[in-house]
Length: 151
Image (cartoon, rainbow, N blue to C red; front, side):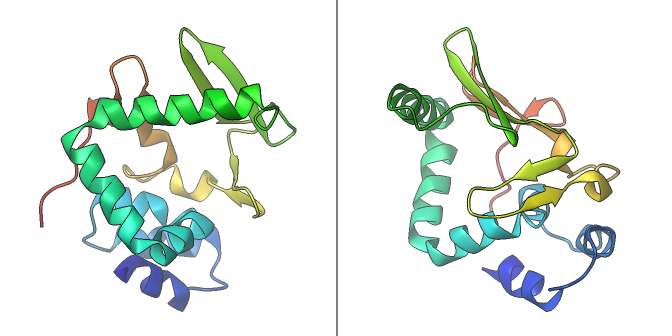
């Protein structure tokens, strides 16, 4: 994955430096947004076949993929493995289980440290430009359903 290799070269850069450097890339907004979550990008890179299959599944059946996410969340919550902590708030809205950062300026990735997303806010592809519309089964980017451009 090109972004992972690029990100490795910026190891040790401040979040602000990284955000500025990422903004200059011609990448799709989803790739730019993933650079603020290096542990997630690394996991996607390690499991590239799975990542590709997930992307293809989402491209053809986005609502079904998001229903599967909710099913896994319900199972985890029922097993006592998904609950609010000092890092995340877990709540139920309608039929959806939401997981949000306890502090909107920091995202916690399991197995990783808190990631400061503040420097990424001013960029259109940053954290706050993305949402999930669980009701309609779509990932939203800048308030519109998002599908990546075909290469």
